[in-house]
Length: 104
Image 1 (cartoon, rainbow, N blue to C red):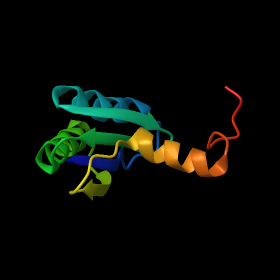
Image 2 (image 1 turned 90 degrees about the horizontal axis):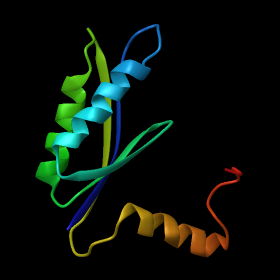
Image 3 (image 1 turned 135 degrees about the horizontal axis):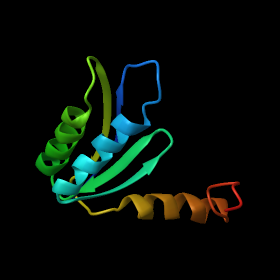
Image 4 (image 1 turned 30 degrees about the vertical axis):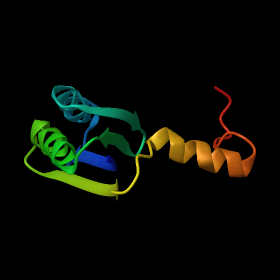
């Protein structure tokens, strides 16, 4: 089973959130998950929902702020394994090109 999620954890503060978000991302290292951070959140992959929830909770708790906003969107494919990259690859196949217009 592959469980994929989009996790967004952020302190509710006026100043830069980067330091606190870095703490949340760093907390994921203690779990058996793979992840990739982007400007809107972090995509996490795990073999079980339990591991994914534990990692998300650790990321939430790692943020040191009076108020923390966390959003977790889960795609739990229960009958087959599909990675996040395979999902992107399928879209790119349909597009016939990379799913970006960035020239990195």
